[in-house]
Length: 368
Image 1 (spheres, rainbow, N blue to C red):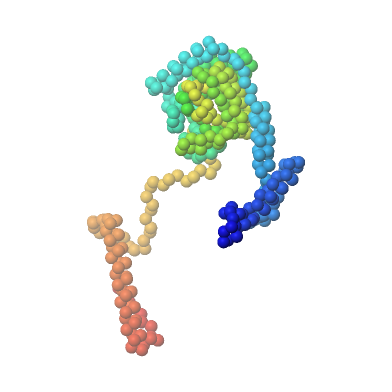
Image 2 (tube, rainbow, N blue to C red):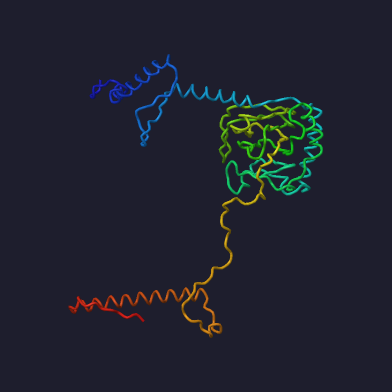
C-alpha cells in the first residue's frame, strides 16, 4: 500500500469523484422506473426567463415520439399520392426521343428567352417551360413563398404537339386528368447527381393535382427533407417514394400542399427526365401585373430645386465664372479654419482680460 493509503490508482480516482457513481445509479433507477410508463412530455421546474416553463423529455421520449410522429406524417403524405402505370417501354422510347429533340433545340437557341432555364447547381440540369412559365428562386425580386409570378403571355413557347399527342391524350384516356386540364408542361432534364431542392409547387399559381411522368431511368421522390449546401447535404425524408421509368405520379392534398418534396442527388444515378403537367389558376399573378395599391416611391432622377434666397438678383452674375464643387469644398475648409482661428483669438483675449481682474465684464467680440 502506498503512502496515500491506496494500493491502486483507480481506487484513488474513485474516492475523488464519488458523485459519478451516484449519478449512474440515479440514471439506472430512472430508466427502470420508466420502462412500464407511457411516454409523455412533462414540464420541468426550470424557466426560460419569460415566465414559461420549458419542457423536458427523457431519453425514452426522444427515441419513441419522433418515430411515431414521422410514421403518422408519412401516412398523411401517402394519402395524397396516386401512382399509375400508363406508358409502356415502347411509349417511353418514343417520348425520350422527343425529349432529346427538345434538349437539342434548346442548345441551338431555337426557343424563346424564358422557355429554357439552366439550374446553377452542379451537375447542370435544365428546365423547359411550355405553355406557361414562372419566376422562382433567385429570379424573385422578393424571396419567399407566395412571391412567384407567371411570365406574361407569349414569353414561353407553346406546349409541343407531341406532348399533347403522346402524353396528355393518354392521361386523359386513363382518367388521370380531365380534358382541357393541362395548360402548362415543364420538362426537367437531370444528369447523374443532379437534384431539385425541397419545395411546394406554388399554391397561388397552380391548381391541384400535380402530375409528373418519369423517363430514361428509375429514381425517387422524397418528402420532408432539409437541404444544406457547400457541400450539399440532405436530411432523412419523411417518405421516400420510388418512381419508375414510365410511371405517373399524381400529388394532391397533404402531399402537394402541406409538405415539401425534392429529388436528392443520390437518387439520380443515371440521366433522368420528368414531364410535369399542371393547370395554372385563372387569378395567378403575372410579372406584368398592375402595381400594388401602395407602391414604393419611384427613384428620383431630377435634381432638387435650389433653395430660395432673400438676396436681390445680381444682373452681372451670369457673366461671372462658375464656382466648382471642389472650390466650394475648399472654401468651406478655409472658412472653418478661419472660424477656429477667431475662436482661439477670442478665448485668448478673454483669458488675458480675466488675468487683469476684469472677469465680471463680458467681452463681446465682433465677427468680421
